[in-house]
Length: 150
Image 1 (cartoon, one colour):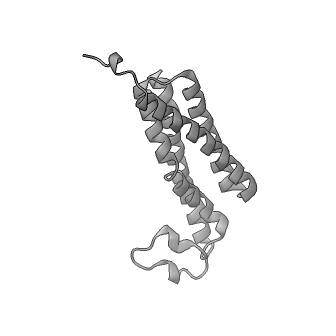
Image 2 (cartoon, helix red, strand yellow):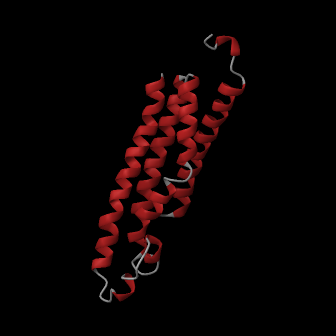
């Protein structure tokens, strides 16, 4: 069950990379439409410097990319813990629910970005993560030491 437990995490990593590459055409397309680019050429500029300079929608992929580096870091840790301790089919199902909802959340945030549904998607994924985290604690804190290799 280790590979099955790690697969959702691998998919979320690939999805995060897809979003990274989504940023490029979104931002460069918006920058290309700006007539006065003098404010964009400062040395050491960062993506955050584009806030208020290009249309908000052009920054949505970057905002989502940032989100994919926040809460999902906990997901990765929990997945590894459960894979090591022996994940169940329920754990794998919860992990796929988390990843599926995060992908829908990404698409919603990048394409539509209406906060009420975005928050609901975030809440659903958070509940799945909380359950996974509790199961990881139970798998480790209540592990039977007599089952450990000698």
